Length: 559
Picture 1 (tube, helix red, strand yellow):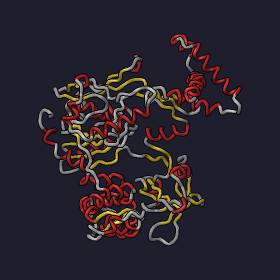
Picture 2 (spheres, one colour):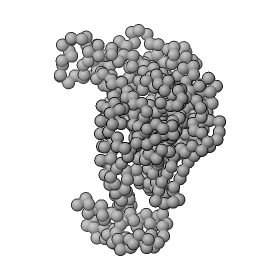
Picture 3 (cartoon, one colour):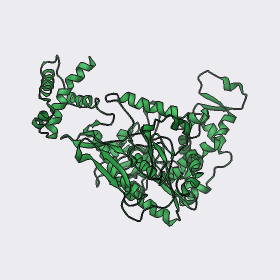
Picture 4 (tube, helix red, strand yellow):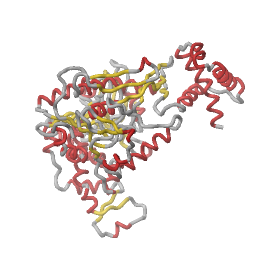
């Protein structure tokens, strides 16, 4: 029955797409000899509208039809409706109109959640009127904001620049609510999460995606790091799902010599074939370079990692990347929705196809197979993974090293994060470290701001909790159903459903990690998102392992 309904929907989608895109259907039909099929599908679409037992929504049929048709293609050809497309444009443009805050939703009883300000964005309208991290938004334009969802926040606080909105907050330490009248403005949201010096000679940059502003942000970060004495660079692309190919090409160009290929796009349509080469310039073409990647690094991230690896320019460290090497082009529809259709495939300079193999029309299997491969490779050493590779998936770099295809970029050095204890997994999984950081600032925010508010450069290295703060954290967890008892205590065998019980020794095992995460969240709330990464670098196992590998990067040639 599902197959029958899907076939019926194809008529609507072919008809709709042909009309809204303005295709010359006669030429398409003639070329593909599909006239008879198109008429059949159109007849079926009209039959449903005219003869079905109850009235149907033509627009809903059409949208379902489009999705049904794309289901038969690759996993990355998608339909984006008009409403969702607004958010996509914001992500790619790296800006929106609003009041300029990062926020979180604090769960309350019976759905009475509260919106809390994580950070007023630097230079934004909320910072200018005096809003602070930790403020709880309780009303917008005199209407209650208690129980707001993330969608409600965006709906009420975003808006055209120049318009005003009244925001009422409760501030910890103040008895009366505070009112702010904020004039909305264009708000950038940065694609560079952090840039700082790991030590006297090593710079660090983390990019969360590739949007229109990414290259300019990256270059600004590089200039600042050079001024601080950077000689070598760690570029962190972990969890970077990609974005604009152009931005990836520009950043890769900063690392490669004039004339070296960056990426090639191949298609059955000649107009979409493309080769991108590095140009001469004064980039970071000689300094030691390391790229961090993981299973969530995709698309544009893989272009950068694959290019520098194939030219022996950098050591790639982490886990095999996602394997998205399909190029999509957006075809706009009149209502603001978009068809994003695959037009070509990415290949690295050595000829590796970045895309993971897939079977058309089986997207669920596609994602499941990625998870299976991640779990399998997590149990294997690099040599064991390489032994499974057929000769057809072995490629040669500029310097003669062997690299591997099969989908994604297999790092030169595989490093997995440290495994957490069950106690730490529970705490982090329930975001209790984040909740404690918020509660800690509610209690200590005034004195903390007086001592540390203007000392951003000192915070990561010099701020330390009082010795008894870990016990205060455990007491906080106890109120949240996460209990810690002395080793050997009979409480540890309780199965009455009253929360979860862990031994003190298990809690102590990840003490440094958890307290560092709490410190990072306090730093993020007080300064900016970059302080989170700067603070946790000391407990970032992958980064710390990478810092031990500079000998392989600084030698000549790369090995």
